[in-house]
Image 1 (cartoon, rainbow, N blue to C red):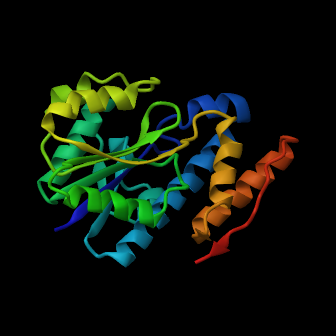
Image 2 (spheres, helix red, strand yellow; image 1 turned 135 degrees about the vertical axis):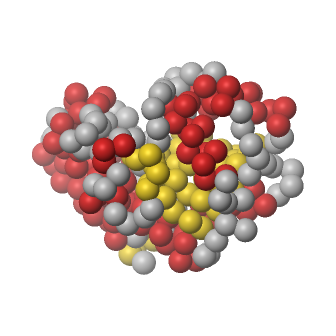
Length: 238
């Protein structure tokens, strides 16, 4: 059985990226962060695929006109489609379920994710009791959602996104469809105060992939430019 892993991204030059972060640290720095974070998540997914060939990575690209952008050349690409986030989550999930038994949807703003966490998500979906799996974010959203069962478009679209109860709304909407396995909560980056939290999370990893190390070094350099203090404790590279 195969497990699709779709990484949701926006493309600089086609859409504004990390807008809340950009208001505080500037558009250029926010764009740098987005691309580094997306690259780190992609490398994690690639490493998970190396461990288990059942993983099938994809980019879920926000803009139809950016499908051939060189930033997204590493994996096959899907257009998220038009509409609000619920519409786009529904479209990508439904398309991938036609070709794969299990689907994982993840964002590009929690790059401290690890191959082991993806493995845990896949194993949760192997359990007959849990047709869904979720990794909640500290801000009330979710950094990962996965499933092996169909989900009605109305379920996706009635959830309020970018709220402190987004994850709980989706869980409540799915409760009658089966149990939801829970992964560890991670911080995803939306605001400047999330950057040092991410740096500490990356530094605490036992093994850093090269793209995660590059992001950690960028965070250290950014904190120096901003006269902030981010404690960097370098983990080993794989």
